[in-house]
Length: 251
Image 1 (tube, rainbow, N blue to C red):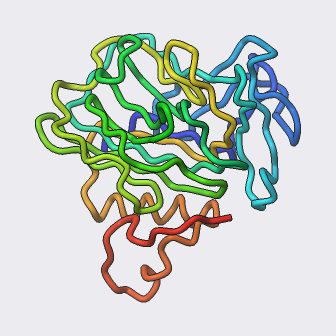
Image 2: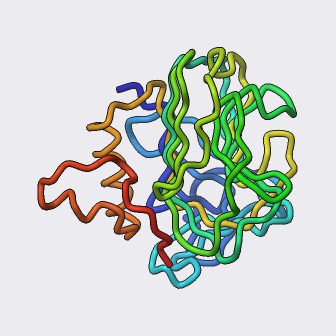
């Protein structure tokens, strides 16, 4: 399976660009390195006052997170060569200490300032969606809690976007291929550096394919277990289930 990128706040979190000082609780994060098996491109922020913080127990969840202030914090994953995908799957575990802002973005990858040319999980003027290319703004904002977002789509087919099982976008066709350029993925903001969000990201990964249900099950279950999301209690009993099939807010 062609994994593009995987970030876990349980490893590879650095306080300096040289990656010699680990980011311990309360320290700024200059570099977030991907885990083995994905591309080696780091998520970075070189400007000190725009660096998120590492918190070992974010919002008393008992789990670590990379935490942004909602004002100007962001990190980017910049690629040295263009890439494209006809299919993509994105999984992101994150926490909110308060209700999601009316206009904000948790992650994006765009060709320009429009919403119809990449992928994103965000909100605009009081409603939110997670989409690829097209968008759907028909869902209420998330309240404080822990979440697992999933977006998957194939070129020319309908996309699916869920957050803890609630549908946050079945918005038409995915259209063209995902961007064929070197524009970065941006965490905690929109690609053109606005729409910041105060949030904690535990885990972020995306694939150059539309994962099948068994693979999506395995990855969702692993992330849920790692960060105590508790979304997959039926798996241990061997009973089949649809991924993200238990809607709930994890405090």
